[in-house]
Length: 238
Image (cartoon, rainbow, N blue to C red; front, side):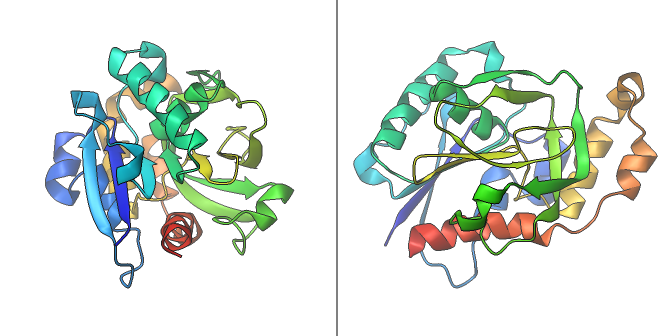
C-alpha cells in the first residue's frame, strides 16, 4: 500500500477546526473514495521529525498562518528536506504556504504580495503548458478556486513550468521537474470553509480595501479546483 504524507506547516483557526477538522482532514478528503493508501501526518511546525524518503510515496505540504519570510528554523529544515525529496523524484504537492516554501526551497523568491491580500473565490486561468500536465490536463482553461494569502511567489524557481495565474496573482501554480507542484489556491477548501476564513479575517478587510459582503457573495463551488487535488492522488496511486 502506498504511503502518502501530509506535512503540516500550521493549523487552521480554532472555530474552523471545531467545525471542519484541520488541514490534513480536508486534504485527505480530496482523494477519490475508491483510493486506497496509507495516510500519515507530520507536524513540521512543531519540530516533529520529517519522514525518511524511503518511507514516502508522495508528500503534500499544507497551508499555514505563518509566513515563509519569517525564516523560522523549522521552515529552513523543511526547505532542506524538500530539496532532497524533489531530487529523489518523490511526488510533492505544495498548497499555499506549501507552494511558497517549495518555491523557496528550490531557489525561488517569496515575499508579500504588492497588491495585498487575495481572499475568497476567484478565477484562475491555465497557461498553455498546463494542457499536458498530469494534474491539470482535461480541466477547463478558466475555473474558480478558493484563496487566502498575503504572501506570494514573486519569482519562480529556475526551470519551473508556469501553469496558472489570474489578474491578481501571477503564480497560482507551477511545476518543477516531473512531479513537484505548487498551488497558491486551495483545492481542499469547501464553500463553508471559505466562508469561515472570510469571517475570521473580517476585522482586517475594510482597512485593506476589501468588502466582506462582496467576498461572501462571490463564494461558489470549485469543482475544477478540487479536481486538481483528486488528480494528484490518482496520479500518485497509478
